[in-house]
Image 1 (tube, rainbow, N blue to C red):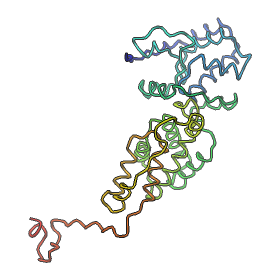
Image 2 (image 1 turned 60 degrees about the horizontal axis):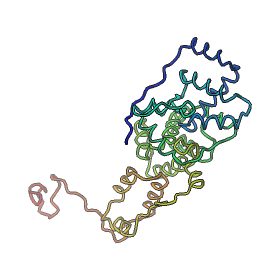
Image 3 (image 1 turned 120 degrees about the vertical axis):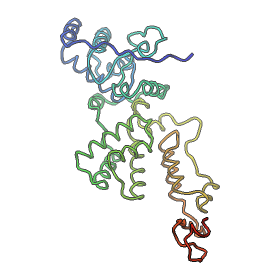
Image 4 (image 1 turned 90 degrees about the vertical axis):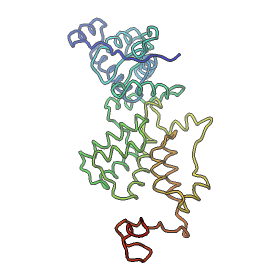
Length: 329
C-alpha cells in the first residue's frame, strides 16, 4: 500500500522556552553546542540519518559525552530549534503511519526539505542497504559548514578551470562552485541541468573543446563528492564498497550506431545532445558515452552536406532565375 505524503514541521519554540527546557536536562553549554554541531554536520554529510544511528556514531567518537537518556532529551528539544536540520518521524511525513518512536526519528537536512518532500523520499530510497561513511571526529565536524568540500585534486582542477577558462573573479567562482557542489550532492541533477545552470548565470564555455573539458572535470568531481544518497560515500567509493551485482556497469555505442555516425546517417551533434539529456544510472556512464562519441570520427568518404538553397538564391539548375521562380516552385 502506498503511503499518502504530507509534511508537518515541528513547532519552533522561542529562545526563552528553549533555554528553560535545556536547563531541565541539564547539560553543560559546551556539551549542547557539541551535540548541535554533530547534528548539523550529519545533516550536511548524510542528508538523512536516523537518531539511533546518529547516537551510535556520536557515542563512538565521543564516548563519555552524554548518556542515552540525555541524548534523547536533547534531541526532543532540538526538534523545536531553528537550525539547518529538522528532526522528524515518518508520522510527520506521511498521513497514514503510526507514531514514530523517538530513536527512529531522523535528522533531515533543511536543504532537502526546502527542495521538496519528493527529494527527501528519493534520497531515503537510494540510501537503503548502504553502509555509513564514518570519518574521525574532526573530519566529521568540518561538515558543520554546509559548503564544506574536501580538498581533492578533482575539486581543485574544476575550480581552476572555472577561473581560468570562464574569466571569473574569485567571488563569482565561489558562488558558481557552491551551486555545482549543491547539485552534485543532490545526485538527481543531470549534466544537462548543470549546463543550463551555467547558461542561466551567463557562464559561457568558449568552444566545443571547453565543453568537453568541463564535462570531464565535472564528472570527475561528481564521482569524488560525498553524497547523502550514498550515506556519505562518494560514487567512486560506493562502487568499491558495494559493486553492482547486476545490470550494466558501462554502455557502448555499438557498431551500428558508430557506423551511422561515421557515414552521416546520424548527426553527431544531435546525438551528443541526446546523451546529455537522457536518463542514465550514473554520470560516469554519460561521460563514457560522450568519450566514445568524441572518438567517433566521420569517415573520409562521407559526402558533405548539401548547402540549403534559399528561395531568393540563384537556382542551381543554371537558368539564371531565382530558385523560387524556377525549380523551387
